[in-house]
Image 1 (cartoon, rainbow, N blue to C red):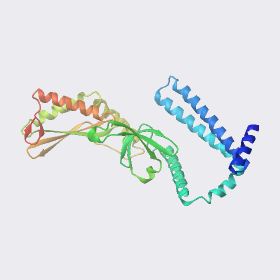
Image 2 (cartoon, helix red, strand yellow):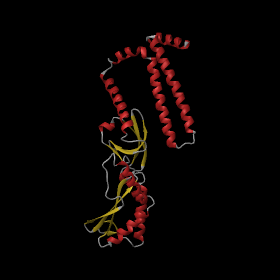
Image 3 (cartoon, helix red, strand yellow):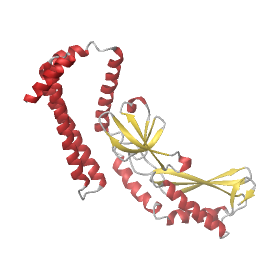
Image 4 (spheres, rainbow, N blue to C red):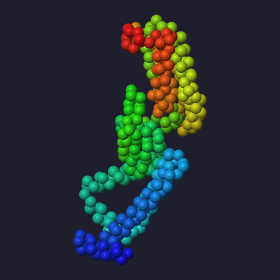
Length: 296
């Protein structure tokens, strides 16, 4: 501790600050440094472990949170005697800084709400304040989302990460795509000639949907999921199987193909369905129209 006293005396004369405050600041920095080294070591250990990447992430985040709490408690103990005078000093802080501190506190308590109420969890696909993406990180003051493109572009990842303050969950409507269950309703539309054999066309498309490896197992899984969440949510569906709706639009027929799918697999499923429909068109079984009045 002798070196701390020497450094404190030197900086006190240089900066005109009480030696005791400088000493406590140095000790605080030492605590932060030691905890930081421990974080690096534990991170290195988990990075080389044989568990899944998800477990590595969860374990690492848990240890980081515990070490952060330990750091906070140790620094609080170090400064305990001077805390009263510091609080008095804070009371004279400018209004602008007070607002900033208020936002930090607001985000902190919103983080507690997120932790216990769980409006979303890690890896959930959400939409808030115009931002849609997958939650990749949740921490004390905010959460991070890996952005995805709009529906028209298949909701593919953009590679961009957006940091969102926790307080947004109180300020903006939050959509969770997988809160109650993993699957959402998706729709694709095709146009066929108005003189087409409607029943034959729909039966061909139904066969495509029934034979899809991803889609054919979802209704059963969805039924089980609904049974599990009906205690908490008033959710029910009369129909879980894929369905095709018919609409006459001017001089052609519009078919809306509706089916349940995991939001992260929607684009691949849509691609498979479109390819199978095109294959049936080339075989002369479906009369597609790409624009009004013109056959493909």
